[in-house]
Amino acid sequence: MLIVDGVSRRFGDRVALDAVSLSVPEGRMVGFVGANGAGKTTTMRIVLGVLAQDSGTVTWRGRVPDLAVRRRFGYMPEERGLYPKAQLAEQLVYLARLHGLDRAAAQRRTADLLERLGLAARAKEHLESLSLGNQQRVQIAAALVHDPELLVLDEPFSGLDPLAVDAMAQLLRERAAAGVGVLFSSHQLDLVDRLCDELVVLHAGRVVAAGEPQELRRAGAGSRYRLEIGPEVPGGLAWLPAVPGVRVLHVDGPVAVLELTEPRAGQEVLARALRNGEVRAFSPVVPTLSELFSEVAR
Ligand SMILES: Nc1ncnc2c1ncn2[C@@H]1O[C@H](COP(=O)(O)OP(=O)(O)OP(=O)(O)O)[C@@H](O)[C@H]1O
Image 1: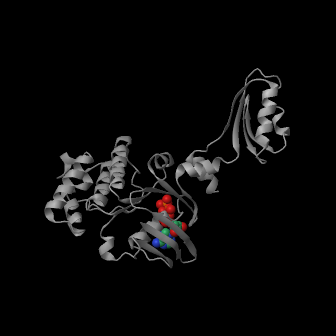
Image 2: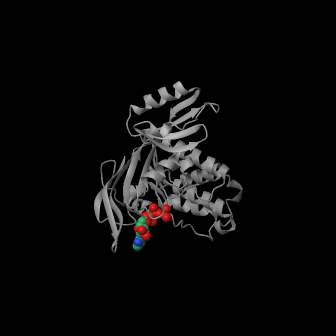
Image 3: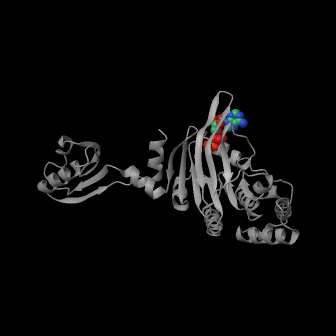
């Protein structure tokens, strides 16, 4: 697996990364999220050796990766970087060969990827003649063409239409199923939630949450509950704020969202609601990834 351990990096006075630790196991898709400027790109550039860290270590399969090992990584940088005036297929074959594939294998992989990404008919066109979304697909092909062992993708989904997102997601899933570790950053939290096996949340250069999204959400749910009573119950929810150990976050007619500051208060809330009349629901609120994100990034 890839292990980033206590990596720090400054730019002048600005601390871009402050002891960042994360891991990308083989066969897992790890989503990397954080607000603009949180340090995602800086972390990825350090993993790829494009930028040096001030302290901390990066290891792949237990060793600091040298150039030969890094050639077997696939990287999609934020500042893209293919040649606008070169033909698609030609430059993909060239890149695959730079990463060590022989000509036949490079051509095979190129044809396969262009087919998968819906660009086979355009193989001989120049990159600059494609729409931005299609150029993005070629960037993805460039990161994948040499069958890398580890994929590090900076915002691979930005600018893609929903069909391309699905094609891309499926491609990455297949690579992960084949044992490749995938680290990808994105601001599309619903997509990250759907795709990733693990999540790392970065805030101002620090990892503020990490783990399986479901686990993180469950932990975030903690003590938040939603209570819904029947619309005809006399007095509605007026009694709720007076229950000890309860903080009412929000009331909308017969529905309330509350936080239990005292875990046993839940039983009391339910008992009182039942005494008053009809109870339609009383259940823990599981936050969405975006809610969780705004909470940890505050
Ligand atoms: N070459 C550089 N020189 C000076 N400061 C830099 C440099 N690269 C990054 N930074 C600073 O480091 C911090 C982290 O930036 P980084 O690009 O890693 O964030 P990010 O999470 O990728 O953001 P975004 O979501 O906007 O791409 C920012 O404050 C940024 O201004």
